[in-house]
Length: 243
Image (cartoon, rainbow, N blue to C red; front, side, top):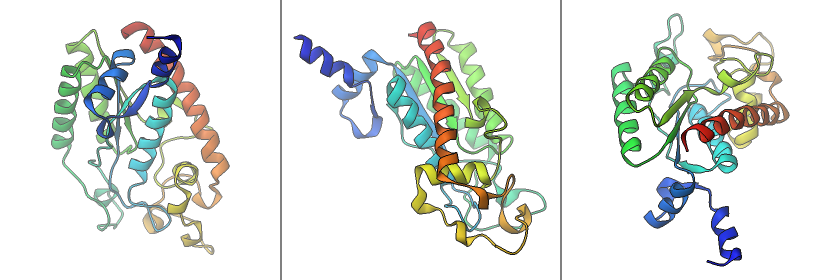
């Protein structure tokens, strides 16, 4: 292989697992055996955001990281427990598809087992949904696999886990999530759909956190950049240890 072909080969460090042929997958996996598993939800996020917000967010955050550090991005898992439809004190029964905690654990275990069998050394689970114990279940299963398979590492987290609180905390369709949505998929957001003559609330608007009427694309872009910087540092540490 000449130098030019070597350089071109090195460029192919990431890809979409479900959109590639086996030879393409294996070429990337040989260099960077990293799997990204975006974990989303179909959940009501008020009248101003799409029901797939958690999935869109998780997918794009994984994509950003894969482009920088290499690896294969798997299709988003649109299954979640502990959605707003079952949250105490609110009444939003529609536009959410909720699954049991036991099913989430089982899917996570079976998915991870097969990714380990496929030869991935680092597996990233990024949960766009922060409902509890949904998020804790994904983290717990990751911990169990890290004990079971000490030569591989599963990193399960939500984006706010690696961001400063002054930039992003756990929220539901509030300023933080809405700003990220404006950054990644602005056509899906309708800030004008929020009321203009009263405070925003969880009970009326399905919003938990800072006022989403203050959300901007610039805030979302800044959040995504800091996330990528912090996530890349952690990924590099994992790459040095496990690859």
